[in-house]
Each structure stands twice: as structure tokens, then as C-alpha cells.
Figure 1: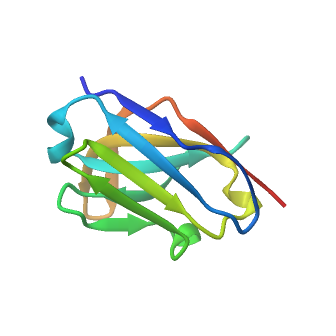
Figure 2: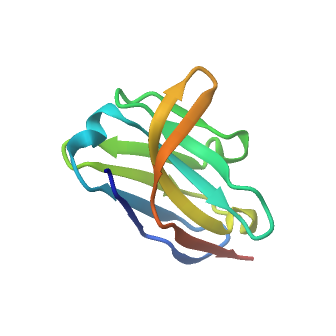
Figure 3: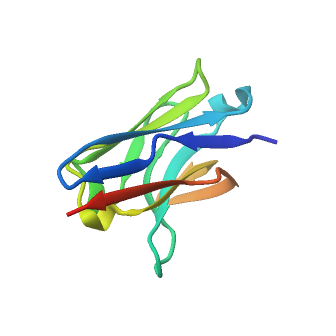
Length: 120
């Protein structure tokens, strides 16, 4: 079973940047789509970005132009570069491995989450 471990969360001021990293436990990574979700207090978990094993990306409208997902298949890593952060980006961010199709992403494996807090 693939295990995912996130890192890179923290406290940042509005307008600042953070880069989240997610390490996969083994080389199944190369044939899985990967996604970053977030869950703010009292809200549902939402998909913010996904990337196929070939590098095709999708983003939620709320983060387009500010967040960038990327992956390094040789290192079994996926990243989320977050720029121009806003207080509403405050959430626990989760890495997920799964299947992506036209208009959907179905996660099968989750990381434990990393907290991102953006102060105003």
C-alpha cells in the first residue's frame, strides 16, 4: 500500500508563499494521479489541484494562478507551490494518490495532512 507523508506547512502572512511536499512510500507513484486537497474548519474537504502521471494539471478556480502542483516521478514526490496566500487558504492540506478522469479525481490513498495558516 502506498503511504504518503506531507511536509512544509506552517504559518505565513497574507501575500506570502509556502511549498508543500508529499513523499510516496514506493514506486507505484509513477502510474497514479496525485492531488492536493484542503479542509478548513467547519467546511468540506475540497480538491485544489491534481496532476496525472504524465504531468497534466487541473486546479480549482479559487487557486488558479496562485497555486502550482508538480511532481518528480524519479523521487516519488509531489509538490504544491503556494504564492500570494490569502487568509481563506488556511486549512489542513492533504496529499492523495488516485485516479483522474474527465472531470473527476478519485482518491484511494491519503496522507496525514499538514496545517497551513495564513494570517491577515
